[in-house]
Image (cartoon, rainbow, N blue to C red; front, side, top):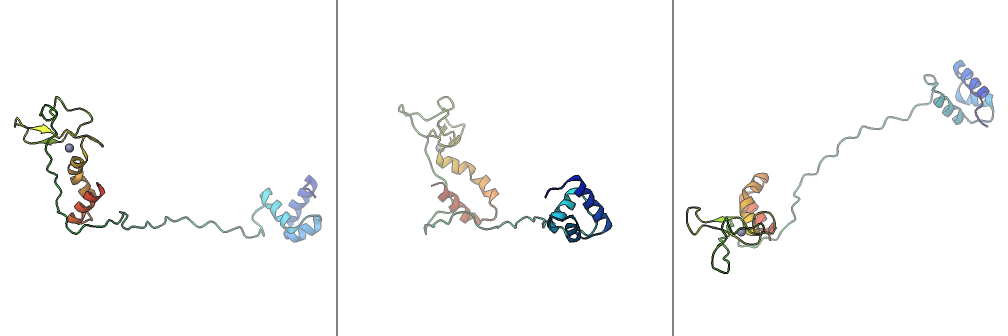
Length: 167
Ligand SMILES: [Zn+2]
């Protein structure tokens, strides 16, 4: 049975008189107590003997962040030098000359080798896979900044990690 205007008016009246939902349902006939309660809510007739509203949702709290070692565990070779500085010679072209400012191109490692005032000064010249440097020089060039970011690691352990992660 639907909610005709007449029935809604009756509902409003009985509700205002303080009848319970089940009493109203009985008077109206053809509806359940729940239907009356639902209609009362939809009509906005709150503030009386309304059934308890569902409890407010608990406030979502931020989950605690799990802080822990995230780096994959690496097997450490027993003997590793604590400082890794590849001693690389500049690459020589076929004519025996090393890469200079003039011959250096985008795909070559731009790591300077030697004293800039020395005529023998040259650039590494190896293929630069990632960024301006070859793998070895990138490791050298970026090591200090990475070390700053990972202050928690002991210096020796850090160097080993960096060395291994670059392999
Ligand atoms: Zn290089």
